[in-house]
Image (cartoon, rainbow, N blue to C red; front, side):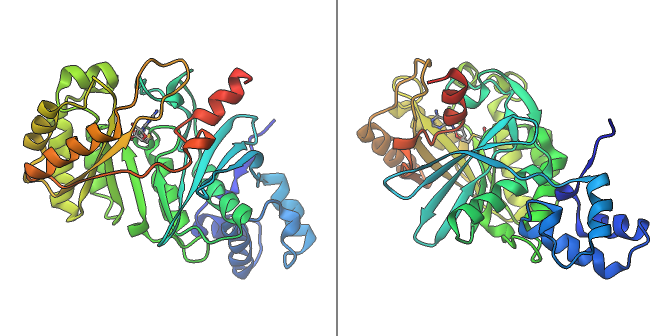
Length: 344
Ligand code: SAH
């Protein structure tokens, strides 16, 4: 059977080329694109498109809609979705509510091949990349499911976004399009475990998004035990790439630092981290570990996290402790999918 083209992954220009190739007038392309960009779940919804054209499009294109398998709402208003993709795979998205609006945490891959020791998404490895359209669908489905506008995005769900580079860049363009979800680049953060060449490539895209880097340790030995990617790109190279990114884009880089008791949370480590980052336009987000079933790590206690933050600031590096949202509903990366796969 011939693969159908994923129309949700197409830019307005690509939809136009398709419609013109079918001998249809250009304005039909704008109509079709508007439906797709706004989150239509089927061609039959396109009430202003003649049925003959809808039938032709159905023969050539796939316009799948995510199925909501689970929706959990936390006491703090955080909503976690487990979606089923058209091929039966599942991904998660989390809608977080802040005073200034709502932010959706989007997945970029099914599974992940980076192998971080504390992360649930990586158990079972990488299954496949998500298409740009499948990332867009998460945003559309969350907006429809909550009846609210999604104001911002963090690419901090399942997967390593820079390991699915082209689809992620295309997604950013699509989700920013004012004909569709219209989410401003300045309200989008991309988080990476530190794929150095891809960080440099991203800096050259000219997109005013925020870069977050998951650092989690100030020394290669500790980081390599938590994050195998360190063996390929040591901390020195990652921090240098972050510094180049900040200089080239003029945008502050955020370092994520998940606090694990007795592993990366000592005062000496805070001092080493400060020495590493001093002088870079950056901010450190300290994240209490969300313990994952079957993994041994234990979260640092709050007092220790605040002491770590104070040491960073005393040494000239700005830092805050991330508020925990949705901890009552498995809202840490990959946990809902994992639980469902384990059948409990
Ligand atoms: N692959 C990307 C984005 C996905 S993870 C990256 O590594 O940045 C998003 C963030 O959640 C990362 O900082 C990741 O290290 C962190 N994280 C993963 N599992 C966690 C857990 N169990 N508790 C706290 N933070 C976790």
